[in-house]
Image (tube, rainbow, N blue to C red; front, side, top):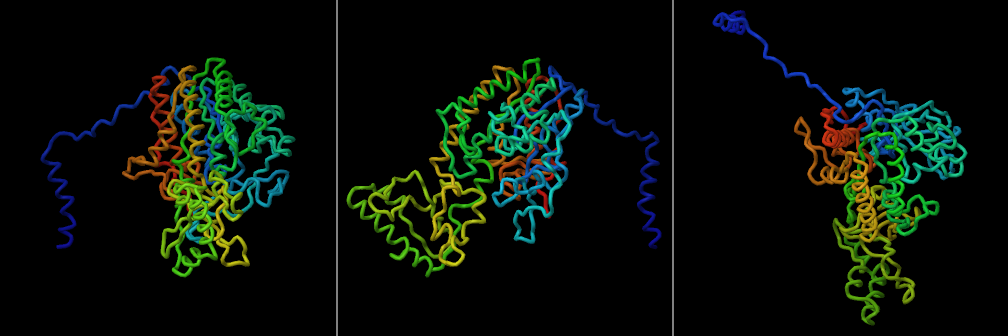
Length: 507
C-alpha cells in the first residue's frame, strides 16, 4: 500500500501530461534591458568628498567599507554603459587601524590616532566595541595612484584646495590629513588638483558635512565663524563661514568642469537626523527615594535653587529663568541629566555658586558618546560624584537649542549654495538632506518588506558610529545619486539592491 501512495504524485503528473497533446513551452523571460548613459559620459569617473565618499563606517575606514562605498556602487552601474575601472586607495586590511611611522599614538594624546572599526559585541552587553588586533596599514607607505575615489575622511571643504594636505611633513604639525598622505601625488598636491588631473568625464561631489559636523559632534564647543573669511584662523571644530564655503565650492566646480565633465552634487543633511544625536535620551537617570531626597536637599541642589529664588524675589531674574534653571529630582525612572549651558545668564557676579547649570530637556541633543559617560564617577574615590547627576555634564556632551540653531543656519546656507551651484553648472542634484530625514521619519522599505531606519544599531541605515551610513545605508544613498543622474542626463541606470549589503557587522 505504501508503494502505491508513493506512486500517486507521479501518476497524477502522467495523466495530466496525457490530457494535452501539445508540446509545453516555457514562458518568455523579460526582454533584456538596453542600458544607456544618456547625455553623460561615464568612461572616467572620479568621486570627490570626505568620509561619506570614502566609505567610512563604524568609526573607521577599512577594505570592506571601501568596497561598499556609494561611489564604488555607482561605478558598478556606470560599467554597464562604458564606465571604466574604478581605483580605490584601499586600507591594508579590514581592521581599519593604522600606524604613523610605526606609532599608533603619533600625536601622543593617549589614544590611537586611527583606531580600529567598531563591531557590535554581545559579550559587552550588547555594545559597540573596537575590533581586536593591530591594523597593518602604515600611513607613510605611499600608494601609487591615481585613484578614482578621492574621498578623504575628516576633510573640510577648504582643505580640499590646500596645498600640502597630503604632505608627510605637514602631518607632523597637524597641517595634513593622514588618509590623503597615503595617496597624494606629491608633497604639495591638493585633493582637487589630483582629482582634476585625471581629466574625468564624470564626477560626484559631496563636501561640507565636516564644516558643520565637527562643531556639532563636539557639543558646540567650537566657534561659529560666520563673518570670518579667513579659514586659516579656524579651529577643527568651528563652523565654516557660509561665504567661505560658497567660494570654495564654486572654485572646486570650476576646476572639475573645466574640460566639460558632467557630474552630480549632494547637499548636507541636518545633524538632527542622525543617530549620533537621537539615541541618548535627556532623562536616563533612575533614582531611589533616598538619593532623590538628598539631591533636592540643602546639602545638594536645594541651596542652588534657593539662591535662584532669592534673585527672582529681587527681580534680578525672571520667573521663566527661575523655572528653566531650577533642578529637582524624583524617585524612579526618567530624571533629566544636569548640564552646563553657556547660553544661560551669568549669575556668578551675584553668587559664585550660581553657575550656568540646568537640567536637560527634550529640546537638548545628547551626543552618542555620552551614553558611556553619564553615570560614571568624576572622582573614583567619591561614590557621590556621579556625572550627569551630582556633577553637571560639560558643554561637549550636549548640543543645546542655541547651538542647534547655529548648525541649522549654516546647513541651510550651505544647501542654498549647493542648489544654486547645481543649477549654475548644470549638474545633477541629490537632496541628501531630504533622504536622511526620510530614513529617520518614515524609513525606506526594501524589496523583502523590511524597512531601513535611523535607529541606532538596529535600523540598518547607519553604522555603529552613529554618523556614517552602514553599507545598506550607502546603497540607499547610491540609489539617490542614480535617480538624480538618470533624471538629469536621460540615462536609465538600474541602481543597486540594498539587500545585497549588510546593515550591521556583528561579532
